[in-house]
Image (tube, rainbow, N blue to C red):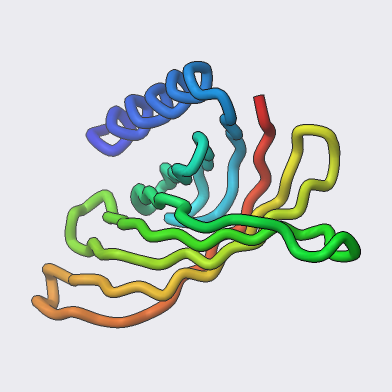
Length: 135
């Protein structure tokens, strides 16, 4: 029940922020499990059934005219709902605008996490994939 309430509050916050931001995208995907993905200017946020993450995009751009993908590089953090694992990450991603106001996104994120249950740090990588609609 606690996870459901927190998820609803976070989703409501994402939707409220989307209406206030100039460049907002909302969709769904896989990052911290299956959940809601949002982009608000240079902030990527994700609320999933396994946890929550947020990334600040500090570099983004496009490739040559022949390549339809855009790229981004950011820095962020994540935490699982149990609070047993949290860490920092560097998302390296691609977006593909496939229709008016729609895009697909995918990213790979090298990460350093701390696992409280095991009392250790670990290096790893995670991946995300999803679709978003721009308002």
